[in-house]
Amino acid sequence: MRAISNAANYFAGGTLDRVAHRRRDDAWLREAMAASETRLLPFWQGKHLVHGPREAPRPAHIPATATWWRELLTADPVFLGLADGVAHFALDLSALPDPAQAAPLSALGAFVDLRSLSASLDPVSGNLLAVGRGLLLWHQRHRFCAVCGNPTRVENAGHSRRCVDKACDAVHFPRTDPVVIMLITDGDRCLLGRQPRFPPGFYSCLAGFVEPGEALEDAVARESFEEAGVQVTDITYQSSQPWPFPASLMMGFHARATTTELTVDGEELEEARWFERGWIRAHAGTESFMLPPRSAIARSLLDSWLYKP
Amino acid sequence: MRAISNAANYFAGGTLDRVAHRRRDDAWLREAMAASETRLLPFWQGKHLVHGPREAPRPAHIPATATWWRELLTADPVFLGLADGVAHFALDLSALPDPAQAAPLSALGAFVDLRSLSASLDPVSGNLLAVGRGLLLWHQRHRFCAVCGNPTRVENAGHSRRCVDKACDAVHFPRTDPVVIMLITDGDRCLLGRQPRFPPGFYSCLAGFVEPGEALEDAVARESFEEAGVQVTDITYQSSQPWPFPASLMMGFHARATTTELTVDGEELEEARWFERGWIRAHAGTESFMLPPRSAIARSLLDSWLYKP
Image (cartoon, rainbow over the protein chains, first blue to last red):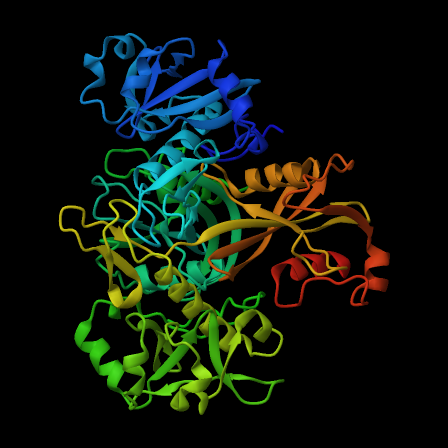
């Protein structure tokens, strides 16, 4: 089936039908790989091949009838699924020193980072490239078996890897790291923070990885206290977003502060501050005060509070 | 801070203060390890040491003043955090052939599986053991670097591992696999399924792992269709639960079916069936119709629908 396409957050939803039952169907996959309409989506050192105008880029693909790409391949093609009935595969060409020097590739488009594409790329394509990015980055960092140290080989059309050592035979699946992200409010104020890596004037919601033995709500409470010294209650889920930079799954929450004095940890956050709703509305988007882009769940959490009826 | 202790689901909540900033504080950790009140929680081949009556077991611990356990240790002790101000560490003794033969250990209690403890162990202890189990199982299966195949060593008091190869130097964090679990309803009926491994007469909610590039809601829709052929809408989050068997994080949803004809995949589910609310209330708990235990989020999803006002 098609995934739901009306998802609130960028990178989610889309129209990709993953047809997971085809992943072990070698004959079907061989045929799909050779079909003239099939799309091969190249990926190079974290970037995707796109073409078209800068304000409306489109994913570029290598025609399935071409063969020159095979010698550029770093790893097995990964089967993403069907979009509009057409098979899509992701190709990792990261071993190529400079794709601009590879004539057949540079004629098709240019490699661009997905994060910078998210403002202009349509959401259906955004989801497609997010799936490919997530899977290929996982393969890049999981060539070996964490159980025994032997190499692993790709199976299941790129959706799992298996240890080559017969005695071990461990199967490894793509890794996804659950992250909670929360807008903490205190009446008409909300808490925003700055990570050291943020550009000047940029603020966002607090966030952190879920640890073993935690429910999402536990992680929201722990991270709020660890990063800013704030205790919270009324922790309510809003929505979620895949975030393949490299492997996060963001789960967005609203929470109400029960203490408001701030103690910033200084490591994960360099600053945390309470902001008035009216002040944010008046200043957001100016050079001295920037919020996350509309493609980020942090902004969706903020906007739902800033503009709630 | 203490985590929230009123969490709806077993294994979550608890009173453990993880004091993450202490994980790199070697002097503090050495002192904590030697303090007479410190608790060392032994773990053997997936089981925890418990003592006390069968209907009210308690986690057993090795006194911090003892030293005999050091030679039984498979891996570095893992610092869990503070509970009631007392430091707790988890010890992996899995290399021991038979703990019943190790006199100092067998005098302290018996090793029991956490799943079977969940009906009788208090929730605060349930959370504590879930944290330990999650971390120790992760260490067992991640002794080597997935990036380069070299061994990794424990750091951060057991909360990360680092590749011993200086050129690689990859840091690996505990892995948690996001899973969606959903109660699909159609008016007064709900959809339950049987996995091939379930005991006869046992039914539960549908569930599945979130894939790269999916929001939780996308995964609910995909898994409902893949496993039972059902399309769903009105996908709403209920609650979450850590599920360290071995590394899942369950996220519970309600969803409404828009198609009701069932096509069971036969692989993940051997059967799926619509059940009337009244019929479930009348038959649940009999030998021919069993539901998940109250400690499982599947039951919490079911009960909130079965008994909703």
